[in-house]
Length: 159
Image 1 (cartoon, rainbow, N blue to C red):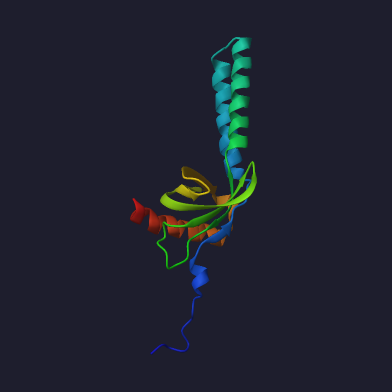
Image 2: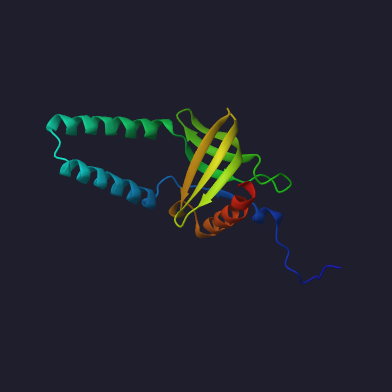
């Protein structure tokens, strides 16, 4: 028999369903550090003016291409509990065509101190591999704990 005083945990609380903030100070800090390193290295290399201009043009082209072509994760939802944890994740993505709901299968999760890296294979709207990095400051503390637990448990099962 079940104890009537036992705490009942709703099934919904066991699923990850979280909004992801677009901006991240940690990501900005990493990119700023990388940019400063490149500028310092090029300064010490004593390049000529046309080489600095060429490096600036190529950097601007690469940054704008990446900013415009990569979809942005807005929301992450784990599959229902009766499904396998790696199947049928829902990803709300912002693309050049607007916000779209994508379905994906989780391939792997890599956990680091300040970020988590998810590797998916999308099944809808088209099949492709997708790598998503979520920084600690993009989600709430509770959701960060849930994502870390998922990465610890699922990372061992999928790999």
